[in-house]
Length: 254
Ligand SMILES: NC(=O)c1ccc[n+]([C@@H]2O[C@H](COP(=O)([O-])OP(=O)(O)OC[C@H]3O[C@@H](n4cnc5c(N)ncnc54)[C@H](OP(=O)(O)O)[C@@H]3O)[C@@H](O)[C@H]2O)c1
Image 1 (cartoon, rainbow, N blue to C red):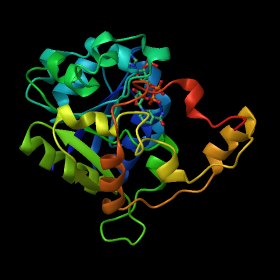
Image 2 (image 1 turned 135 degrees about the horizontal axis):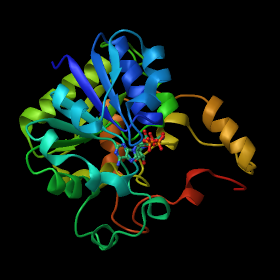
Image 3 (image 1 turned 180 degrees about the horizontal axis):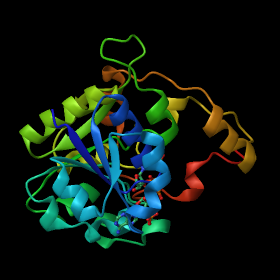
């Protein structure tokens, strides 16, 4: 189990995972696009086992790296510094945020395969992107806890997947290996396993934007076990729009 975890992208997801990693006794190095000094507050909040660095410095300091950027920035990741590392990809393709990416729109590849292509010397595992950042933090439970949830992962390298399973375990989740990076569309945004319904439950109908946000922030959390993860990822189909659109995120007015 690696002792130092680097985070490239330290927004909602990066911070939630960094907090879980610190809780698990791991050292963390956070990074973002604006520079380490802009992360002083979050580092202070995380305590003595956290520090901030540039993305390349963070990557070099750790053997396991979590990347949590808006997907459009994936090709800015420092490939040289990430070579030889296992890279956990939490990212999703949101066309209205990331711009249309034809290879994804035409289903010629998956977002994690594009990342792997950009990082030929790294071992990419897609994981930790199916829950919203609030529940990702609050739903973590120790191994064997009756309310522990499971999360899917995919990757092409068996050793990297084993490492990712151990990392998820340390953070507070069981892992379900659902295949290779070519299969990773089964847990991309907009599929049955992703983000909202399985982990929160069926939303009330007819909500305003404000109510929907309140429901997301303060609504219930459902426990999703390994069998349910398998069922939901099996239900995924490659029909309809690719990726997730903001308008589909919240069930406003329905
Ligand atoms: N939010 C969720 O609940 C959730 C759930 C599942 C999956 N995801 C996915 O996870 C990813 C991150 O989401 P988020 O909500 O955490 O995003 P976010 O809060 O907007 O944070 C994005 C982070 O990426 C950094 N960043 C942007 N460009 C960068 C670059 N070129 N180099 C280094 N760092 C860069 C930003 O740093 P600066 O601020 O300095 O630019 C920021 O720290 C997205 O792909 C998202 O779709 C999110």
